[in-house]
Length: 305
Image (cartoon, rainbow, N blue to C red; front, side, top):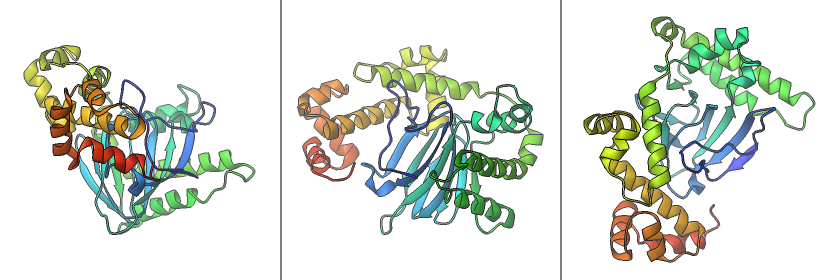
C-alpha cells in the first residue's frame, strides 16, 4: 500500500492523477495521511476510477452536488465514477487517515461490452442518483461490506496471485454494493448527467485560463448556457457562484506556486490572475489567514509534502 500525502491533478482540469496505476492493471491501494496535506480539504475534482474507502481514524466530510456526508472512524464509502466531489477534514485533535481502493471500472468489467459490464457495472456508474454510498457499522449488511473493504487492504502485493485476489475481493464488494443500491437502480432511468458535464467543461476552461480575465458571459458560452443558468448550475453543483469558484481556483494555484517555486510574490500574483502584490496579498490573506510570504515560509521549510 502506498502512502499519499498530497494529490496531483491533470493540467487543465481537476481530474485527479492516479499515480502508479497502469493500463494493464488499473488499481492502486493508498493510505492517505490527510494531516500532511497542505490544506485541510481536497478541492472539487473527479476521476473515471471508482473510489472505495475506509476511514481508519479521524473524521472526513464528503461533498457531492447532491449530498454532504460525514464519515467517522470505522465507516466506509464509495464515490462513483466521474462524480464531482470534495473533502474536508473535520477533526484536528487526532490523526486523519483514509485507506483507499481506487480502480477503473474495466478492472471488474473485463472487455468492453461484456455481460459483466452491461449487467453489473454500467447500471451503477451511469446512475446519476448514485454519487456516493455511505456505509456504517450499525447496519449489519453495511458492516459486512465494510469488513470486506478493510480485509482487502491486508492483501499483499508480494504474494503470488495478488492481482487475481484483489480483483476477486473488489468484485465481491461490488456485488454487495449493487444489492444495497437495488431499489435505486430499479427506480431510475439510466442516463449520463449532461449538466455535470457542462460544469466540468466550465471548470476546465477556468483551469486553463485562470491567469487571464474571465467573464461570466464567456464562461456560460462554453457550456451553451445563459449567464443566469451558469450561476444556477454552479450553485447547485459546487455550492458556490462562478465568481467564487474562479477566485478559489486562483488561490489554489497560488498556494502551489508559493510552495513549489521560487517565483516572486509579484510574479505569482499576476500568474494567478490576482494582480499586483498588494491586491494579491489582500485576497490571499482573506482566503488563508496568512500572507503569501508566511505561507511560502511555512511550506518551503516544512517536511510535509
